[in-house]
Length: 285
Image 1 (tube, rainbow, N blue to C red):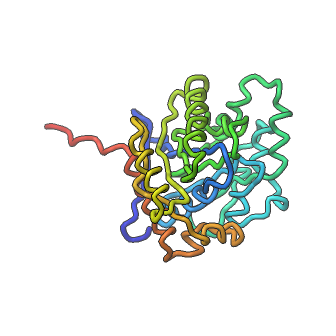
Image 2 (cartoon, one colour):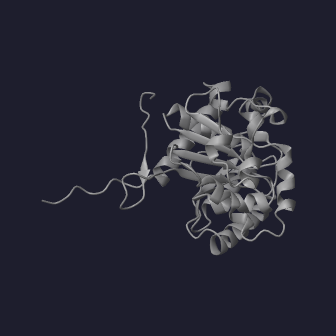
């Protein structure tokens, strides 16, 4: 484990044998906001900290799969298989990446056909959640990161049904607030109908240019929204994040010493602070 890193292991109340991963769905209604890049970067940052990470690609575009070094057209098994075959466990479709501690359930373009095949299936939005619980489920991991399509369709809702937390990358643009309203609407619907345990982890400002008054005003406005947490970490505009998609590596590996890699390490620390429950008080004798 790296210096200063810490292994976390969470348990259900009353049980000492059922470790529970922190599962985070990364959701945005539009593309190009840094959603997939954030999933890959967080996987790298948590892996450096000694966490056991499972990245799950729930997007037919399969960008997280390619972003972690795999060709989605050349994989024997993907997330499609556990969605359509109730006999398969997550272990059967999980592959190790080249970075220690980071595993991946990949996607492929065939995932786009799954929704149509399940059009009349009762409880279809819970199929992913149920599939991830088969066998050992997620008990071998500390952190689970689910990357979703840039829309609020079936696969995004399925990820929200399977996750414990919602992370919202928010690009500093004129459409940000409109997009946020749609994310929150989908979140409330998923929480009410599918997953009452789902909580909002926070908003992550992306493509921030602190030299412009617009970005400054946007950040101020976001932080004034009641009951919504905005992370202290902001992801600034940089070409290095675009390069990682071509390199097939998280920014923490591709440009280890860069400011943006450091920013994602800081975000990982913030997430742990928000999600790891405090230790129980010492027993009084």
